[in-house]
Amino acid sequence: MDTLTNKQGRVKLELPLGGQEIEIRVPRNRWDKGISSFHWLYITPMLKEVKIVLPKPAKVQGFVRYEDGTPAVNAEVKMNLLSREGGERILSEPSLNIRTDKKGNFNFATVPPGRFVLSASDGTYYRERFLTVREGETIQVAITLPIPSKRQVVGEVKLPSGEPADGAAIVMLGKTLFSDSQGHFEFHCSPGEEAIFFWLPGKGAAWRWLTIPPSKEPLSLSVTLENGGVTGQLVDEQGQPIKMAVVKLSRAGFYFTGLLASHTDENGRFTISPVPSGKWQLLVEGNPSAQLPHLLPALVKEVNVPSNEVVDVGTLKVSSKVGRIVGRVEFPPDFGSREGEWEVKISLCLPQKLWLRDVYLSRPNFECSLPAPGVYWLLAQGGGWSSGLQKVVVPETGGQVSVNLPLKRAGSIKVTVRSAKTDKPVPADVYVVTADGLEIAYSFSDCEGEAWLENIPPGEYFLRVWKPLHRIAKVPVTVKAGEVTEAKVTLEPKE
Image (cartoon, one colour):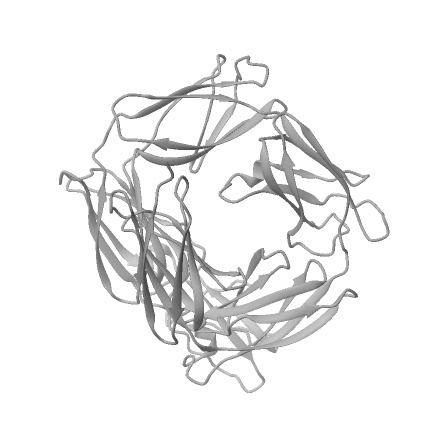
């Protein structure tokens, strides 16, 4: 139901007994009075009136400059919400977005409390920073962009036959362009590294990590597409074909999984093409039209695709036995003044160490559907607390398993990543890994080389830091309850 508050901010609702999620929308032009938010209420016969206090907005101000000190005029500045801070979960409003003035200054006057990625771009260069915004505060931020250059990337895309690839898509994070009738393409790019996927349906595909050193000379690139593929059949335990399941190919560092996907047909068969050569992970997902009673992806097979060859993986049996974990998060007395003011994230790890995350909104009881029997790990995190890893075994017959997740005080890790060659900050992927190889937390370092990983259970871990064209760094860390552990990581470029 939808209804409006009166001039006194009051509203009358008739709600069924039990847990209810109340969504309060405040027009953006009135966010100076309070921020749109969700609130969790438990309705009982004795509950007659509830007072809800909206989060107060914060201010984020600053400037964008180039390395020589000149202002970056009309640069785009965005704030994308990662998670809300402490209080209620913020609505999925569009990202905050403004442009700098003639002096390079910007001012976000009404910002929800939470954890953000603040980014600035002049159309050629892009920099981002993590930012924790607390209710009612004012934050000053400075972002420095490289001095503009005229570096261009020009090249050609060829079919496996050597002929020009007309209309091939050149896909990068944030933009897509197409080759002309001669297979030529051209774009501007910041010095650094760029993941690029070249794709022409039915003709071929290629994937490149492109290193772009600073220079005024254009960088030339020639790419030949590969027309490999993966085909096979999915069946259930009785050998019956599984229809309309989603089959995908993925691998580490590959951001374009949606382009390498297919559905099974009436006979359970699938074909993914074109596929670049290399080692891939074959993932299967159910959907409402499939017999699979789950929507979670399961790793089925590792596939090595040679150049311009189609690999038949044969008949793959996918379990339709459904497991279910039901449990309860046990909140400590000092977790918060009201459970409804907090958010806890339940993380589920598949037997193949593939993490799936389900946002859990301060409800003591929860349940998770499982794609198959096996050994799983659960982790509850939020508000500076964590349950620690809980191992759960779902039998081959499927069924329901019960578990309790008591929350205890967690710690945080502040990571600084720098280049061994230049000693400059490095943006990189940062993982917290257990001795068994489970990745329990992930973040990425910003333009200052800093990454924060929060709600980590106390214990001994390794930081695994990865960046394309660099050697993987592995650094041991010890996390203590209620403390911030600082770690410095140096990345060595590959020769």
